[in-house]
Image 1: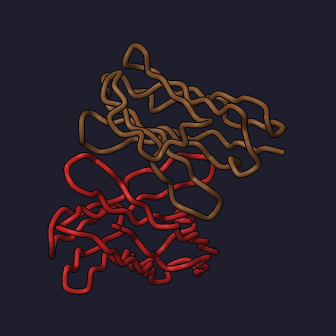
Image 2: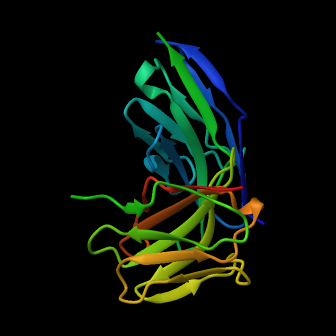
Image 3: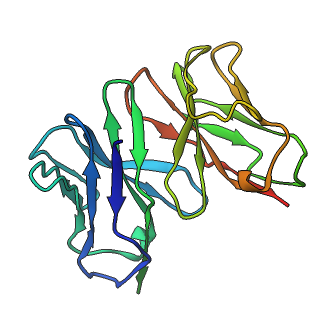
Length: 112
Length: 112
């Protein structure tokens, strides 16, 4: 069935470092792809999304490009901040019923 | 605007006891979701409501889990009796039809 595999954590970076969190997916058809972020004690928040191949989603300095040929949707940020410390989830939406499949999450810690 | 509200935030019970979780979605959102998030994993859908109708409950363990959304607004998820393996975070989300899902902070259940 459809699934998402993302880079295992935890990831620890220094402030202003470059971030990449890898995400690959397996799906029939053409799913929409998402990155969610979960700050401590809070629910998941949508960070960015892409609905078709070659689309780039971006928000708050984060970006990810929907790569159909490599079935990937890697999350990147050029310069992370301490406030970016959180758990990041890659997800896909199957079909048109809003059925979401999430990866296991990657915990990011940014140190000053 | 208030987000998705869940209560309680934390619950500790002994195995074989019943437990209930409550969710109030964002005002006007007709679609409501219950997810279970095991430690170190992404959320997994348990049940989805459109208004008061459960349109996808294929992943709900019906021998011990039940849910209701009687007036198409707030919802209750119940487990009876609870087992050790039910320890997890139970997330509620809501959306306007099939648009973006907004998540609540979750209820962390510990079964001892």
